[in-house]
Image 1 (cartoon, rainbow, N blue to C red):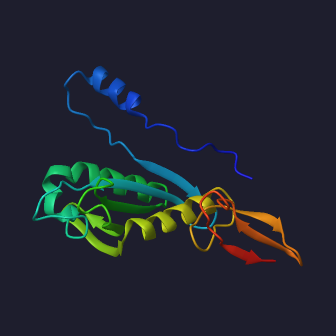
Image 2: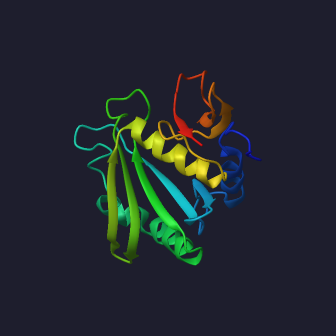
Length: 182
């Protein structure tokens, strides 16, 4: 059973407070979008990189190397944090829901980086749905629960007519019928 709550709102207030305190001065900090601990994989850091809506770029074609000079400090800081925590660092290119490129998500697992950019990576192209399943499953595992094989949401023990099984916690709300028989 999870001892965590669903996401309710983003923490813009913390960002706004830091900006107020700096009063226009440059920052030496980096905001981390998401960090979580997986029972087998250790710490996982997600950095979300929203793509601009332009004809010449989309989440599958954009890459941090194309704007390295603008965000070098941020990416190197994230990499240093990932190394200090022995964490996996994922850079996730995405577009806003409902836009032309909203169904394109690129996940870049950074395997190595130096002052000049990412030197080794594993790249996976996703649809919004396939990324959601990957992300939900990873999050469910981080909560110490079993992920649904169809949607990644937590599974709950249920009693069938003949035997017990794990069924998707989202059933019947979403209609997901993922099952794992015990």
